[in-house]
Image (cartoon, rainbow, N blue to C red):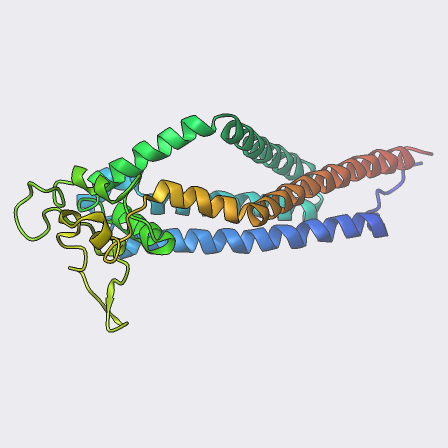
Length: 274
């Protein structure tokens, strides 16, 4: 006697696991779309996809942003579809990818903690390189300006680091000799509204007592370190929350996958009965 295979509705616990995974994946999917959209907007706004700028596309931070957003979007779609369809293959793929992402984050935290001096040296070299290329790279200029304005700092170690920039060193021709960018200025706005692009002109010719009234003298490496130390509690809370959320997603996916496999085995055993 042959029995017909029936689809069994999910139990309360299975349905709860399924819809928690679907909801979480949809939230991260929306986040991925926002990141992807921001990256694409940046690429189009800067005309990075034109034939003339394709050679430098690989180093464009907006491309990294768009690629990260696309990867997050695809990963969440796989997880969402796998949970909704109870597809073992998709769920295994999602589990493997999420485990790889989680392992890479944990490894990055361990490396960052163990190699703090080396990372500081790398950041210092990167910051000095960005200072030297300030006028030549619009992305670097934007990042440096945001850091210097936001953290009220100037250069990597101090404001004299701008000597390595060919436009701002003291042997450069023109009004920008011995100067710093306006983002280093204590008050870069005239009358509180108009950006004064010349507020840092000749600032490095002044003695430090006079210069500190015009520009910030301290470097951004120290400012970043102080910012991280001041916000260490918040940073730790956010990092632990994100890691815990990913671990829970991994455990929920593995649990749902095991339940699906067990239900298939049980259903197959029941339909084989005469």
